[in-house]
Image (cartoon, rainbow, N blue to C red):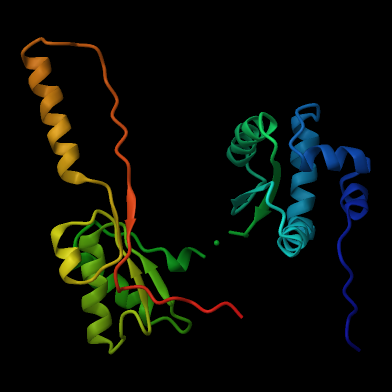
Length: 230
C-alpha cells in the first residue's frame, strides 16, 4: 500500500515544538521577542519536518517580489542563528519579508581540498569525476586549480562545457586562453594599491589605516553550459 503524504502545516510545527502557532509565526518572521531556546527548538522542528521547503515552494509559485531568501545548509547551529538575526535586522528596516530555506548538509564527498595549484587539482578533479554519480559542474578555488580540472577532464574524455561546466576564480591571463568562466578580483589593482599604501607609510605621508574594497565581477566565457529548466 502506498503511503499517503500530507503537506506540513504551521500547526504541525507548533504541535511538535510545544509552542503556539503565533510563536512559530514570530520565529519564521525573525521577531526578536522569542527566547533563544524556543527559537532554536522551533527552527530544529522546521528543519526536521521540512516546513521551510514547503514555504519556499509556495513563494516561488506566487512569484512574490518583496521576498528575500536566506539559504543555509542547517539552521540548528548557533552560528546560523546569529546570521539570521543580522539578516532579520536588515529586513526589518526594509519593506521585504524574509524566507529561510535549508538545503540540508548542500555533501562533503563533493568537496576536495587542494593547494591552489593545477598539479594538485588534477588528481582531485579525477577523484570527483570518477565518482559513481559525478558532478556536472565544478567551482574551482582559483584559475590554477581550474586548469587542473581541464587536464583531468581531457584525460577522462570529458568535454567542457558539454559534459562538465567549470568556473574558476582570479581571472589570470591564462584563463582567457582556456575560455574559462571565472571571477575577476582585479589582482593587479590589488598589488598597485598595496604598494601605494606601503610607499605612503615609508614616507610617513599618513599612518591612518585605510581599507580598500575591491569589486569583483563575473567574467562569462565558454566553460559553462546553459542549463534548461523543465
